[in-house]
Image 1 (cartoon, rainbow, N blue to C red):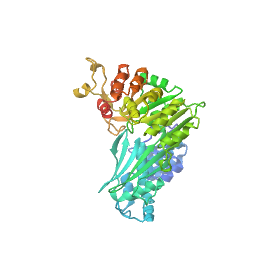
Image 2: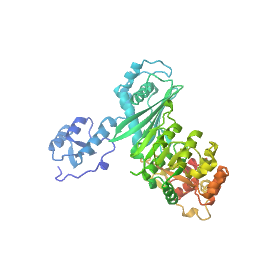
Image 3: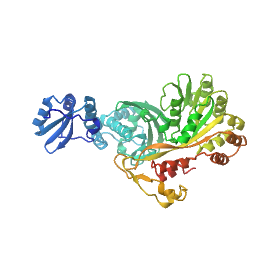
Image 4: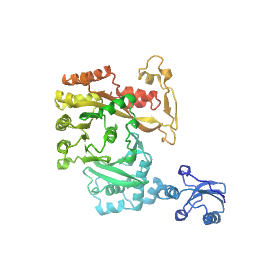
Length: 509
């Protein structure tokens, strides 16, 4: 036995189970040890109490091998035991096997007995299977889990870095049990399979609480179910970590320090608008300011912000909620989205009467936000008086830092960048090869690319004149505004992403 056991950190623990078969889980937990490495006839273990010789003696006697002991923290050892040998160890394939043939298939239009659905969904293997699918998604940094029923299969897909990836899918016969299990977890009506439903789940995974937003819709072959993963730890609350270039960041920080007016963030669904606005509110929040947010739905809870969830079923729309908010004496208002004429008019009036108002619009670029509001019949002179600036954004995937390499793109891709003569030689084009860390995609994580149009005197004149998006865009560019794709090319020049990735998210520009 070693006189001074080596201290082992958690990052050096094995990723897969190590050591002899049939090792007792309860023995490891009680004795606080876990195998590290098996080389020939020597087993290395990590223990919380290396002085306890009885563990090494028991392993020598049971498996006839030499035992080397290292020191580790008790909490690290317990976490590793659970990850490697506990419920987390079971693969989906093993759990499905364990489910056996007693779970029978229910057709999409079948009238299954509710009690039987509950019994099926409460079977231990089904519970473990759903937990495993959710855990896999969280470990892979997925933002959504899709359960999609087809004629002869149930597909499970994870949206990772904005792109759907197929996961190991259970057999179709487990469809009813799996969907019912998730519906029970989210307190939905499992007997109702003809109408869409929405619910929420809060789970504790690896010592952190994660919210899941659940949505079901009936399809031809059963209910399609999507779980949106809302992990607060993935929410970036520092503006300089979102991907802002220095010039836009400086201008935006100056913009959000204004006492009143309207600031818009635009882009399609999934472009990171909510994250940008949450980060903005976190930046400007202080004890002297009252901030009220009206959202549909509330995705993350922000400390010090009064958050209201829209509920159209009881008449709490954006317009009605916004009217009530103005009477609550706020300094800063966040309206999740401007969707209609009424909300637009109240938003403009709120900004006009001394409030700083943030909101989003689903437009392709910053200039398009102006014309969209004019289309909603907002008076152009009121819009020109209240609108301070518009930020458009998209999310691009970042080259994996573990497998990124220098790579010369095809000539047609380089032509898309409209480079000046000789500029190409100075650009360090890179691309991820694909490795275990990035699941062989070449990308790991995402960052935003931005387009910022400040509303100055020239833009105000265009708004009052009722100019179209193209005229407003050209005016902004003539004054130095950087468009979305150009900011994307900046990220390519920095080796952060690739030309195809920028083109993928800016095709509508």
